[in-house]
Image 1: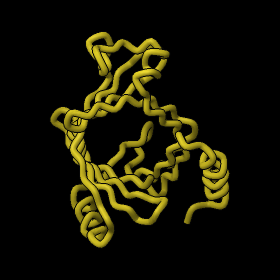
Image 2: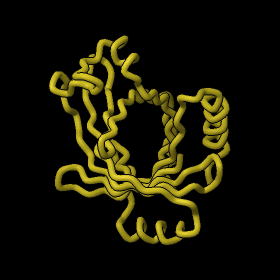
Image 3: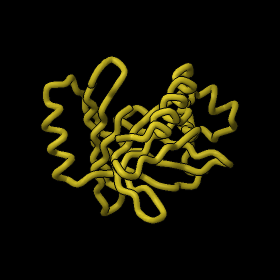
Image 4: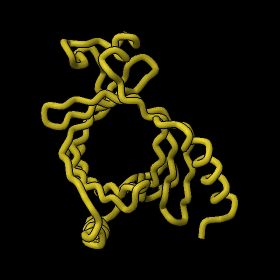
Length: 173
């Protein structure tokens, strides 16, 4: 079980962060190595869990996330069909529960409007971000199915392609 200290730390952070509309709380499954957390589960665990979720309301989407460095900020541009969403996500707190291979993260996630991008002096080309003036950090192709567990909890199951690598990500939000 989770220790009382871990439980209290998670609860305290939830109370603090839930008061903000821009706060994202996520619990990701993965593996801890000596120096890092590697998100994702095995393909068999992924599809087993997906099968167990069949009774829940679900939605699916295909998208491409590209991460750019802009000054001190990391900007994520999510393209889904013709729609482009620009997001700045700032990690506020991370709690690792290694014995269960869980990472709990609390982040501020702000979707930027064109007006916000102008204020932040982010280069634009028409209504879209001008990515030719930014440095690419990473690009990920995502195929996500989201299951609505209850009114406050969504289970995201995502197949992520990053170059030749495929990762099966599972996260609760």
